[in-house]
Length: 433
Image (cartoon, rainbow, N blue to C red; front, side, top):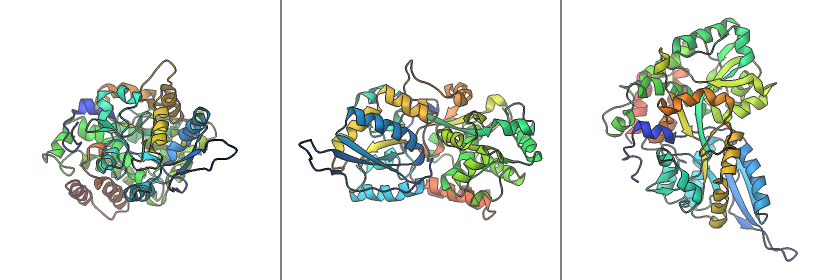
């Protein structure tokens, strides 16, 4: 398999791969060299493995680590969870220095400092290709998991970006039917605003949150019109500035100009965004479905919250959606306990583990059997995945420079410190590095 920068996977095939993105915010991370406890009472020493991940991995990891302890009581896993920006810097640095945790978060495909392709090319990820679950990865998914035909990361399934909304708030504002076109979406926001509520909670102080509205709109403004856009951009025949990215950013700012965001989005965190929707102070948040459980935990009743696709076009049949492989994990190639770390990944590849992980974060399981469950909140997205879904945009960007530039220019646009022309120019310059 060729490097993703030179790959020519059709968009129809590639959307099934469903790229990833960065979603997270949580406690501080810690990572140290793996160690083995001393032998006591004649019992074999326990192998200690360290894992550093991001917040939306905590609930499934807690569940599966507990299950693994029953299977392998001689292995102890210590987990910690860090904000995405910290993972992108500190863990990546530790990987290069040879003192990374045994297991750590890995983002699918290419496009960020902690993405599978970027780390694997540096020789820092253990090859998982001999594990049985890797043989079940659908062909269209392989660019998310593999480099040069070898598998370097595990992920339990796919996630979508859409509107997480509070049903009671929508009902209170008189939004009786979910919008299926952009005009209907604006009308719903207007009703919410007239009811004295913030239509959309936006936590743009948390950098990764800034990208989600753009990602929700670009499938309709770019790929619905030209499914080959990524190939043309990689070949130097298209760019951000001359594409539907401009329309998507105009739509983003239209939401702001019409007063559809909470006050001071750039001063609002991801956690505050959750609270606004969960407590009924805002109608919705455009978010990745993997964090839906976090919103539900903060609500008076989990049933109050559900999701719908964000319609980025004025014809329902022209609406496309973003769908991506869930943020995964890999084993450090240079870890002192690499064999035990790989054994844990192999455990995660069993169908019951895939089902447990996917169910915990409202994801669509990578592979499915009779016991697989799909959250009702994402059912409305499933019809799109046949031929109207695309991977998260960063998955075919040729380097790790574009994503942080995207974060920054959105914050600048929201602050009125930049223009769309300037924002797209910066993204094109980063893409060409």
